[in-house]
Length: 105
Image 1 (cartoon, one colour):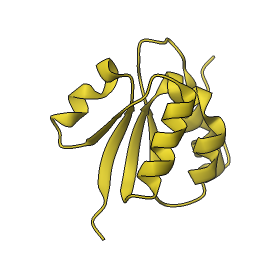
Image 2 (spheres, rainbow, N blue to C red):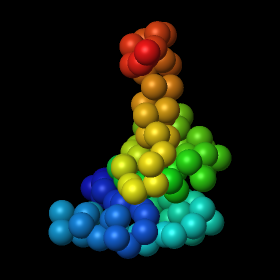
Image 3 (cartoon, helix red, strand yellow):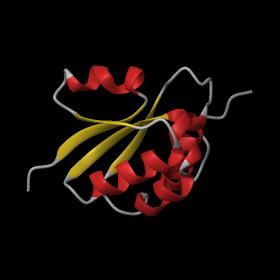
């Protein structure tokens, strides 16, 4: 099976991914973002980039796919100022090695 890569978020945040050949799905709210993730997961997308602000709003949808190898859902920075992507990375590292090596004082 050939897998695809896609991006979900507001047009201004994900349009550039189209130039890389990614599938681009516009979403400005949690409901639309969640629907896009579900649709992409069932249509062969192995990697899904999503803006941090939307990612923080659809934790339940993200959690649904966190235990399966595909799709891998990767938060990308946006202009929201949230650190949700760092939180996800920190949790993944703690699960993988059992310690928080990203701890900041």
